[in-house]
Length: 406
Image (cartoon, rainbow, N blue to C red; front, side, top):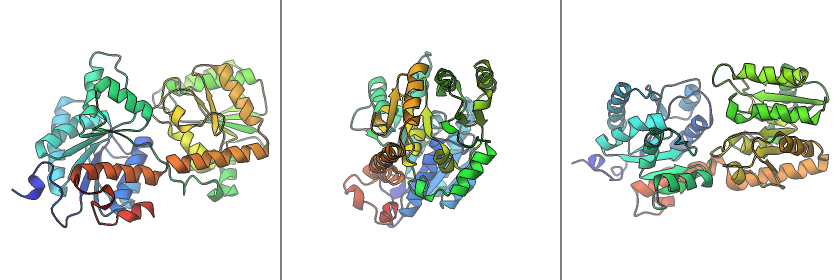
């Protein structure tokens, strides 16, 4: 029997390890961004990287990393489609000589887990949130993510949920926070022309203080609470910007109706597409994350701090780990427009010196805990735990591993 056919065996001598990541699509979002970042790091480290998804606009960016993309309907929950996906993934494993299958979302995991069993390959999962179990079938559906030989949680908040709800022990559970690219989210590299271009396109009035809530237009992101908070501030020198696409039809109309009801029509902008988020953050005087339900991590909070912006977030979930309250930003109770308004007012009242000091603390906090390089290196360490259990993680594969931290 060939070494590649033995369950748990490392790759044959001289062959670089290969990882298959499975996600629903390559449209937009933190999961997709993390998948591309990891693919880039794998290739830089001398590994082989394959991604299977339904595809999308980010396919071109993935291709630039040197990874291979295979298109499959992995967002489907249809049993017949899942069965076909299992066969297709098994063929991908054999063709690309995959060593590890990494499921980064629930629907694809239902195809990836059986494929890993059929091909006898290592199986890794990533929990991106504390998935709700409010319906009888939900816990069983979510539980596929707890079947990994290693289960990655993107925050301590998520890890605690995984341990308590699914009984995943410390032997399998690993906490690896999401990371941002500090070379991209760098205030020193955002030119004034980029900021002016956005301000002009979004029709930001001269001299207006910009309050920004990035994220998909969906109810639980707290947009209605932000509108209530701005109404309580009773200031006309603000411009508030929602930045993000509508997830389901109808909610944008609800936001617009709430804005009109409070007499705030001229103070709000809704922008569904922004391709220069570093410039968007640079334009903001305060960045808000008003989620009504706990987020597993909260990528916008970290990106905004990397850009040196004051941040205000609701006090639950991953935000408690990404913000140092009173030092890099503010935490307020969820669904509390009065507290949200008070924190926004404090942020807007900072002197230039105070804003500068807070921004430096925020960026240093991100650099110490939430970089893309650390996220990728720690994930590869998890892979090496499985493939090379007898070797030190840093020396298990001698390809171009040091390129990760370059």
